[in-house]
Image (tube, rainbow, N blue to C red; front, side, top):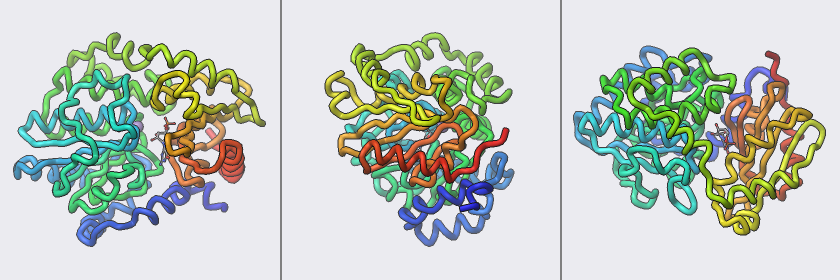
Length: 375
Ligand code: 5GP
Ligand code: MN
């Protein structure tokens, strides 16, 4: 398995690409003509040709007056949903018809993101029109991350993928991938500029939410001077940052507190992995949905004796959604890639149908097969 040391992308591209490899011939022709697959792993942002192609694709759809479908990954976070809503608002301001969707069971916007502007554009997957000529995906590293909407993106004639995951498989017909961007909203902001749309307060707020979510309020290593420069622009455009941050980080239903207590009460250290779990029964007892378990990892990962933090969250179908975080030495993105998931080097995830103990064992085995990060 030595290829992992140099090419974590190869590890994560396999399962998703193979499982969902149903792209139409016209999609393959478009992708091939742009050399997209070869550039998916590039260490910098999109090429000028990729920008030109993406802008032309969007401008054509706006001019044609056809509906543009905007898709976020399953159980969207602030970056995925903020990106989709921001571009949706920008396109609507240009007169375009847009529809935003994603998979979540039960369907709905996570409680702490319900203040995001542009919610009127959101429809459940069942309501997503089946004949849109252009689909744009956000913060989605592979087709399977679209869940029940994956077949839509696999068959739509034009699919623009806007993302910042190193593990991006290069699906779709057009790609705007910047692995140096701390959030997908950074890439969306650049596209909004190229489309000549000015930043309204609403548009800026949607972009800002993705930026603060994925940078952990500008703390994580991917945060760059450009991230701060974008934040400054967004604040100048009218973002009410104190209000927004209070809602994003510091507003939870009361049941979140006993849920957190339960999860923290059973934290264990196994080697250098600190871990805990939250079951469907725990969620029921606390009277909250799975979305409230998302931020538990942020507390668990503070254990200084650990290199890696893991939180297993049980879904209604009994499977475990696994969140992993690294303190810098372990490439959890590569490890999760070996288990059918993916993400970033320091923050990644996967889904498991094994029991909790087996899931953790397999994750530890995957970490052992992964080359350590050097810097
Ligand atoms: P979180 O733990 O916050 O859900 O996710 C951390 C990072 O890993 C995010 O960038 C997210 O998109 C990615 N991620 C989480 N679960 C999966 C998964 O099952 N597959 C892939 N490809 N990425 C995931
Ligand atoms: Mn993101």
